[in-house]
Length: 351
Ligand code: ZN
Image 1: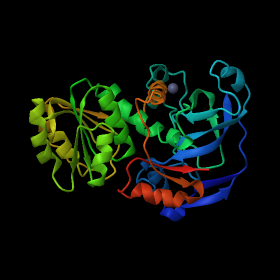
Image 2: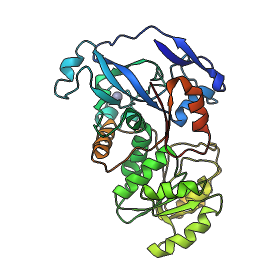
Image 3: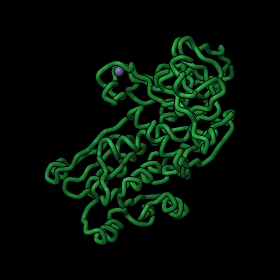
Image 4: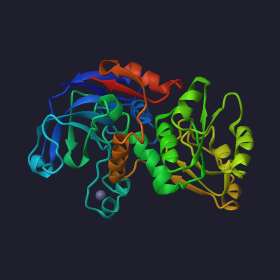
């Protein structure tokens, strides 16, 4: 089968097309014909490499996968008999792989499983004609979603749900600041925070993204290139009787982290799931302990939460946002697009 592979880290040229043997599904696995793969910053890190971290190369990239079941491995058909999934069913793949029987897995904390891994990060991913999936990770694709919309859900929505619902425990009426409102995880966070009845403030880097963020439900949108967001907050917060935000979602990292922490009210919570502008930050601990601030680190989340998310998407209460759709043969262009700050939503490759 045709596939993309990263054999050594580098620029766009590190993405190479290769011919690989067509995979066979093993016990409790199914073979999926890949229809769409949503790209994440993870894909950029896997391609470029991360200092101090070793990815198992060569590797087929691509984590967020939508496709069609084409073959059952031994035991899979009976394992799925109550799910309605058959050969020919359209599916979305829950991206985390874990052992399924340790304390972490059984507590719904699968990212803490010692065996936790992800396609396109710890094993071959979806930028290929076919992908072998575990039966535990198959979710029927809702009828109101295209394959591209489905592939734009997993990492951003699971991550945003973990930060807001599991970790920060967002409540109705709370003020939530979401940095980088055009990114996939923030687009998910804006919608989830609104679903829980909070007041959402988000930052964007261009005026054209303001209306898009408002359309998702954001109550206030700050163009951080025109006005420092902390200055803008001073004008917004008094209307809610607040001097600081209850929750801040920050995956920008070095460029914003200190200002994000200063934006919190007493007892405020900050959740971080990434550091696209850099991970080295100097923190003033006084600002954290005096104000009883909590900081939550998050990677991925619970498989059960993603089932809930897909239900809410099927009901139209959460919406995937696709920035652009390119053929999988243009994966290099798709990576370029992810790295540009011009996007609003997910870049998806299809075949
Ligand atoms: Zn486990």
